[in-house]
Image (tube, rainbow, N blue to C red; front, side, top):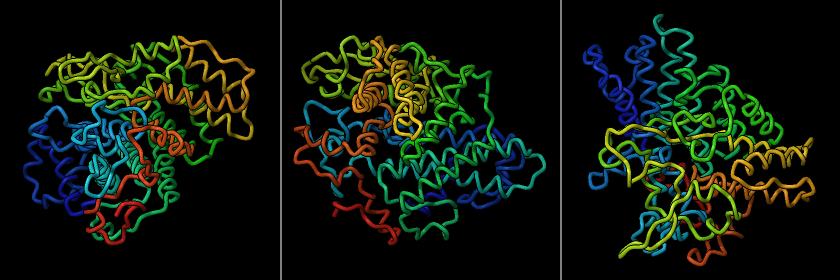
Length: 486
């Protein structure tokens, strides 16, 4: 957590959003460039809106550009494909047939992560904390603002969305690294020597943030509920359903997932080819990418990057016969002189083959969607005290029938239903936000599954957690490295 650098970085992210809009008043600011002050950003709803837009802009396109690979802008962000790429390689979803050490995700793919070769984990850590810092800046700014032109309604909106963004960052950090500092301020004096918080404390803060945010946010989306590119109450409820599932509060997980599913005037499952479209009613929250990035153009960061990533034979063989997700959401890679044959994830249809700079964006980057709520409700229902196995099977069949599969019978045993839940999560959510990696870990199946993969042998269980970036420990001597990295 480069705390001094974060002050400058986050301020520049938010304040540059104000400057590029042509708001000449911002050019007269005399305050230090490494701080965000309430009289700058929170004088009015309009200025606060620009700062809030900057929060989202960072999540989808705030990464450090690589002059040699401009198309990768965003992929080094945890929130713009970084989680999917790193965690997908760590699990049994993504790999490269050559198994070469020069592959970008070789360390994750082969369970060979060391302090000398950390793969992409450092980028995930840094980008998540930068996003959290930006959220903290808005939270503190809203609470300190005194301008009457900054209305109470918009204060609540900014605060709610910032709290939800902070919760999202901490959810992925605690699951990928576990031993993380819990920074809730932009004050360097408060954050420079934070110790690692317990996972329980981090999860409680996530829950607190989401529950508070829920009280501030609208149930509707801007723009007549079509483009779902801003956080609202339903995303917060969906995230709470996930968090409660991970913390084994199955009653609340079921409750929140059920709330979202029951909102049928907003949400419904789409046909497989429409799930990731900009007007998909399955989408709960999505991020709107720019369409002018050199080379990548109108593609989502993940859609562009995944075109060159291979799906493992294990995953391809896990699809049942007749599962339309295999044909709709994967595509073949033809063999060539330097390219082996295989398959890549094709949930996003705009990729490196057809991206156009300045082209129409027919899909945005989906953060959360309704199908996950059905799977959460099914799993939580199976595990809660008042569980209804037939209702669990009904939820699984809703997902299966959409994929062209036959429904499961009510005669399945408890273990068969549990296995079916894991199977549907694996297939429905593959190559999305690291779901498979997180599922293997939280269900205790990671070692059994991953130790059977030849290119991951000899298996090292300690790599179920990524290494804390060594420079972070140098800057904060209260942090300690995860076991196994030395």
